[in-house]
Amino acid sequence: EADIYQTPRYLVIGTGKKITLECSQTMGHDKMYWYQQDPGMELHLIHYSYGVNSTEKGDLSSESTVSRIRTEHFPLTLESARPSHTSQYLCASSVSVSTDTQYFGPGTRLTVL
Amino acid sequence: QKEVEQNSGPLSVPEGAIASLNCTYSDRVSQSFFWYRQYSGKSPELIMSIYSNGDKEDGRFTAQLNKASQYVSLLIRDSQPSDSATYLCAVTQPGGYNKLIFGAGTRLAVHP
Image 1 (tube, helix red, strand yellow):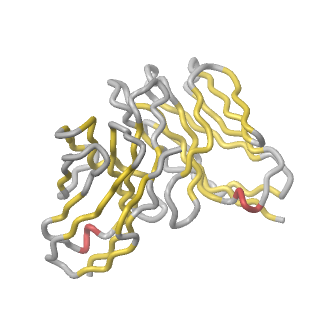
Image 2: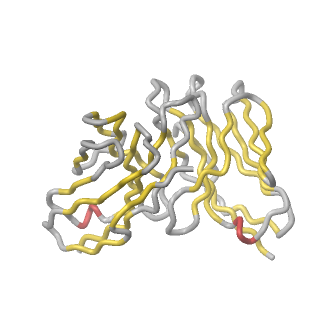
């Protein structure tokens, strides 16, 4: 089981603000992911990383950006938040073995006014 | 056609009954299959993983995989009210990198 942390858990912010959602894991997993999920809807992959200095865009287009400077840390940034960014953001990690299992953090619920 | 399909429910079962949740997927080369449980407002929690045809049991949960029919299911025996949640089926995307495709989930309601 992975220990994966996200902060803040809840964020209410005004339009136009720059925000960074933090995600950290302590298991040394090389792969990390960001998903976006609206209430009652599917999870959509927006970013993933295979390791340090490796990031890729996911299946759902997103205006957010990510970085992976350290193995354990995978922050997501929105340069200028808009109401359309209101959603739950979930971070996950996995290790490169055959099991492929992804473990999720508790999520950040973002509301942009 | 969605890549991973689930009946959205709600699936309502009485306490103590067997709940049967189903999932179909479109890509024949998918190799790994997962069931996650998600309570309202919470993040997904892994319940079961299955990689080969047949059944895999873990406590009250049994996952069943049929790759020829592109079908995976989850059985929950002796259902409890605490099992009431949305169950997400996830399938690995071809091409590696551990990327998953999630279904929209089936909402299960276990009533006393």
